[in-house]
Length: 474
Ligand code: FAD
Image (tube, rainbow, N blue to C red; front, side, top):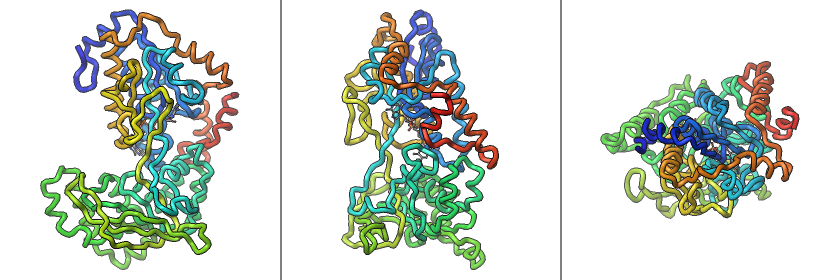
């Protein structure tokens, strides 16, 4: 009776609903993984109730705090999540940090099943000298800053230099480069925060290098994001044709997305910009390949970044699995701003939950946490911090399917009733924690939309959690 392709079959759905049992499920985290897991369970079990706990007062995880402000169409998934949250069998409890305000053990006592969907809130570090100099930031913090993530609201990145260097060749790196180089008029009508817009308007950055350890065939960004960079008004690409020698032939039989992406890089590298184009493009960006960062170099006073020393590499092996091996040569590049975009990283939440620190994931099989029946995981904390929202949706449906199957197989004992938020609410009250409901969020949302209206923005995000709580009378 198990569903196929991540969907509950009509038979499973009928069986689950005919049992008259009302499972209580708790989801930790309100990003895409949390909401898609909740959606799938609610859709395929007519009696299940799902409570979503979120650390911040406001929902939607990286859809609000990661997706670039100039990609509003991506944020339309919020409409689907809102529909789920408004279901009378779903409740949202924001402002509750699981692991701090309530333990996973306490949640497991109160619910028949607990799904951990708390994402990847840290970043990988470079582990090189100079990483802590002023002028060096993680792309995660920079993205959080322009998107109004409370913990990064005071970042105040120093944009007084002309050259920035981004370490990494993924879509996040391209998002950051695009935000740094976009004419501010293009950002003005987005939901970028007011203060970051003001800082970007005064930015002196006019050149951005995107540096990767491997070659053009290993870049992780996708064609849409590359095309946006190539077409960015007032900006021109600098790609060295020598980096692409022979690659046209090499990708002839490659999967279509890789082939098209490589062909676009080659075409761009071969295009000779006319004088007019150079004059019309005061800003520039380029891709540098086969360079591995060794040290961030400091200014004479030892305070700030002034450049970066990189080891040149050669590739060992082919395709995605090719490894970058140092050749022994080094190169220095001047830059006053260094942004490391080498990946997000999940953190362990609670000592009671197994965690694979090497891979930064919760060990699981189809979302079932190894060795802990009744505990599940979905999204980036399940499979690592890669993949777009659709990838996260599919793996969340897969986890939800595991929950539904375990309900059917009797792995989850729903004969004993569990009180869900009844129990957790008392625990939170005793600890002085006041959760934010979804209708509270809708008040914050309405206030943000009103604030944005005057400036023609979809919203002006409130970046201070205290202000959010005051607004809803907490
Ligand atoms: P998250 O979205 O991070 O959600 C996790 C949630 O858990 C957060 O709300 C967090 O506050 C909460 N949480 C954390 N700890 C706790 C705790 N202790 N207790 C309670 N709650 C907790 N995908 C696209 O399709 N298009 C894009 O344009 C795109 N742009 C992106 C840009 C950036 C910079 C990044 C980083 C990612 C982007 N993605 C994009 C990918 C997409 O955002 C992810 O696939 C998706 O958000 C992962 O979902 P998640 O729910 O696992 O994690």
